[in-house]
Image 1 (spheres, rainbow, N blue to C red):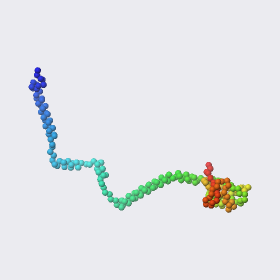
Image 2: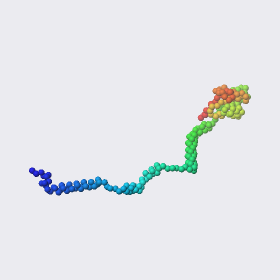
Image 3: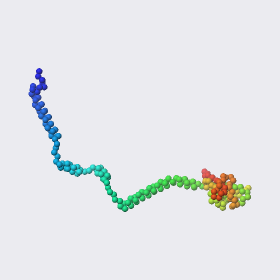
Image 4: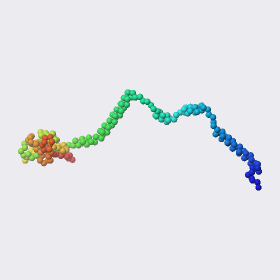
Length: 211
C-alpha cells in the first residue's frame, strides 16, 4: 500500500512546500541585514551631543544646580552694620517679650503681697497694773518705740490699772510699757523676747486678722 504522505504520489502539494521554503529564506535574509553593522560617520556623535545640549533643562535640576553652586560673598562695613543692627533689634524684641512674660507672671504675686500689706490694723488692748505710776505709755516696733505717741498713751482706770486700746498691724511684734517716761516694764501677761539692740526684755505680740 502506498504512503499518502509521499509527495511523489501527491504532486499537487509540491508547489506549496516550495513556496514555504522560499518565504523562510527571505526572512533569514532580512534578519541578516538587520544584524549587520550600520556605518556611522565621525560627525554623528558630535551632532547628537549638540542636539542634547540645545534641549531645555529641567526646572528642578536647574534650581538644584543654582543652590549647590559655590558662591563668593563679600561683606562690606555697611552690610556688617546692618547685620549687627538686625541682631540688636531681635535682642530688644526678645527682651521686651521676656519683660512682658515676667510682668504677667509677677502680677499675681504682687497682688497677693499688696493685699496682705493692705490689711487694716487690728485694735489691741494693752493693760498694765502699776499703782504708783503717774504716766504709762506703750512702745513697740509698730509705733517706732515712741513713748510720746498720742495713740498709745494709757489711761488710769482706777485701782492702779492702766490700759489703752490702739491699732496694731497684723503680724508679729515686740512691745513694752514705759512708766513715768523712764522705766521700761515688760508685759507680765505676755511671752518675752530679748531685744538684741537694747539688751532689755520686751514682750511678744501676735496680731491676727479678724474676720
